[in-house]
Amino acid sequence: MVEFLQHVINTFILGSTYALLGIGLTLIFGIMRVVNFAHGELYAFGAYCVYFVCVLLGLNFFLSLFVALLAGCVVGALIEVTLLRPMRNADIDTTMLIMIGAMIVMQNGEQYIWGGVAKSVNTPFPETPLVVGPFSVSWLRLFVFFAALVLIAASYFLINRTKLGKAMRATFQDRDTASLMGINIQAIYMWTFAIGSSLAAAAGALLGPVYVISPQMGNIASLKAFAIVILGGLGSIGGATIGGFLLAFAEEIGAGYISSGYRDAMGFLIIIAILLFKPTGLFARAERIG
Amino acid sequence: MKRLFPWFALVAFGSIPLWLHDPYLLNAFITTGIFIIAAMSLNLLLGYTGQLSLGHVAFFGIGAYASALTALGFDVELLFGIRVVHEPWPVWTGFVIGVLIAGLCGYIVGKLSFRVRGAYFVIVTISFAEVVRLVALNWVELTQGPLALISIPPITLGLPGLGYFDFYSKQSNFYLVLGVIVISYVIIQRLVNSRVGRAMVALKENESLAVSVGIDVTKYLVLAAVISAGIAGAAGSLYAHYLKIIDPDVFLFLYTITMVIMVISGGKGTLAGPIVGGLIFSFIPVVARPFAAPEVQWILYGLLMILIVFVLPDGIVPAIEKLLAGRDKKKAAAPSANTSMQDAP
Image (cartoon, rainbow over all chains, first blue to last red; front, side, top):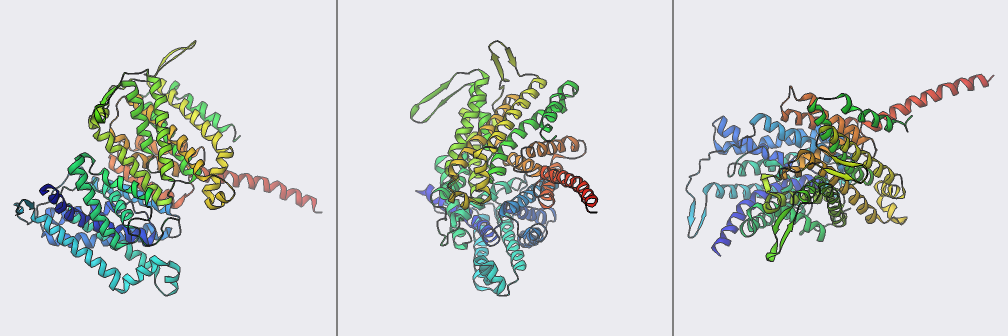
């Protein structure tokens, strides 16, 4: 029982960053209909931002998180304007191929600049974990959990309470009508991609120091983000949040009780099972396969 | 002229081992040929049925492992104490079994994943490939995991009346790969020019219309998946017996991407496309090797891929065909204009 509860604690910490990753992708996938293979690379990019600012420049750890958030936003906007805007009316396979190209360039660019050796970041948090009864959790992970919660809340606020969020929701529901109502669709797409990328970079910036930072970390992150989006249903932020925690739970249980080698397989098995048996996702209201 | 072109190409490529003795370049041709076979099989799905299977490397890897394990033998304990012992079989049976098992996996994956389309189909196929990779990595008793399967014997074949062949040298492997390319080409050509092929193209162009005129979409998609997976399995088997070592990295997503780049750049939905694209993209590393690190080569790959999607969305082969057709039309148009002028007065 103690072991199980420890897994639950780990689930909350891992799940909060997965939720960030998923929310970012569900916005991009839902609103723009772009299968964003570069999502995981922005996750890795965020982690390298922290490494660059915190280790190489020797600046404050918390500052580096803000840098990652902002840099992710800028890179996302750049990718959208240069690669996706000219291909706005192309079919979904074409934009997917462009994003695969972007993924290859970004991942190998990271490898070229930073080398293949994994990097680690020292954080200002104490090494000794917080121990409550039989459970223990490191201070860094606790911080990651709360920081991720703040960002999740911020994206809820952005989507549901601001004018930009309203325009994004309108574009998601019906692009042409939204355009007729005077919404600048090009700007909405740019902001969607920038915000989604920024959330992915934030997830990488938070999770990077917990583990190690390597150029390959983006590979699996893209696929996990897809698993979360499929779990939660397309375009649903609430779904992506719950999906993130569910995926983390499945991984923890899979790693804890089956075999740690199959930790990453859980996400893929979930994708396969959900798409085959309940293709609308667990929480989606609208039909989405067409 | 156009009909004769494949024969010219075959003779030209067939002569390569006669004058090219550099082992590095010969090796490059052999691995290129193996990836061309895999790209041709992907083209059947992507180009003719319009389904982007990004888990295609799974069939390649399954073919490689099935073939190698048939030839090497294994001894594993399954659940409930059931033990399976397999003595090594003749190596050519490994090739056949690799093709059959890959085809069977194509059937299962096709049956299950063609329920969804577009982005969801892509994601299911990637997930399948990743699950297979993790199984290959973790089922150490069967696959040796990251330690790799080593000392895989080369393909040997005893034909009654024709003697005994073993594909050990680079020259013989070259002809073996060329032979499999020709067989795959003929199979795919026969298939796409038949009723089945027309049905596939019909459902690629407009699925609901195809259904409304009575085409059994799932049946044809699954058929394409089985043949495509079988050919990919053949490529995987050649790969395993040529390199003599395979590890779970054969299932890496990057290999699928390599195949996709070959198909897209050459021209999806054309018979020659994967061959042209395969030759171009396999020889970029050979040319770039002296002055570019592997990462830089991959960056070039990625940029080229984006560039091709932007500039030549149909691929190289259709672009050349269009160019030739345009010139023919001009030639044809010019004399007729003359005659009409002469006729006029």
